[in-house]
Image (cartoon, rainbow, N blue to C red; front, side):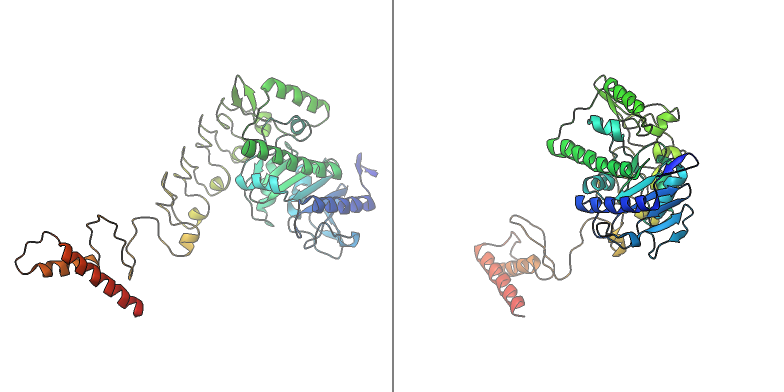
Length: 407
């Protein structure tokens, strides 16, 4: 360790050794597959060591690591840094106190990231004390400037973040603290998955119990982590980390963020949601970036042309209908139109069920009926075919089917 300008940093040797150790632990725990993930450790006010691109974190050697400054300039190393180093650099720039960053794709945590669900239930005391809540950053294309921009609002208020449809990112005052937080994120996500989706029962802590844990956390010197929802008079009440710190109000009981403009929405100047509505009055995330409004209550983007559909200039689905008013995504890419009454397929005989009085085109029931009427003779009333006529009709249909099969 060495002290520079009052801050303690690991030496180059210590940092590189720790990065290799944590890389092997990530790989052994299944937090990364193939060449996924990246790690960085600060060794000075403006310098870090980080993992290279295209290398498995379980099989790294010291000569593979890259030394950089916080402006992204490579100072030492024969390999290139990961394209995702941008979000590491942004963490250090947003909070100069932080010493290390870890990024991986732990399976359970990544499931929550894909679902867009934060890890914020007050059901596990250890999570509240040492980790806190873990929000979800809006979706960003990997390797682009969108990624560091998406995590920036959370760095000073939380200890980690889920990257939408991607994975998890944690940081700390020490490289091992950053990694332990990554472990805690995956453990927390696993507990939430089991209790919420397998057992189907979660006993949330009361607001009084949560307040006591937060006081202990403060005494431990942990300043970030947000405030999880808690039970208040039998109803779940949400308060949201950076929003609460900004003097904003808590959610109305029973509503998800009903009275608080939080996270990306607040950062974008969005308004709060109406009680009982999931962000119905706030343009947030990707939609807000596109200047669009969010979905209405109970509708899946019913009033919002958002995402790939909007990019294609399409409108969203009608409430309760599956793409009824929208030719979007793979269907649109294939040039298909929206859902509607199915047109008859050419060359295919429509299905006729017993008792149906409908007509078959192209030599089906019409032709058979013609045979029956003809058998009745000229001037006979069209009261429908008799037994003999039915036999002739069946024989004619069989003959035609056999003829088609032979053809």
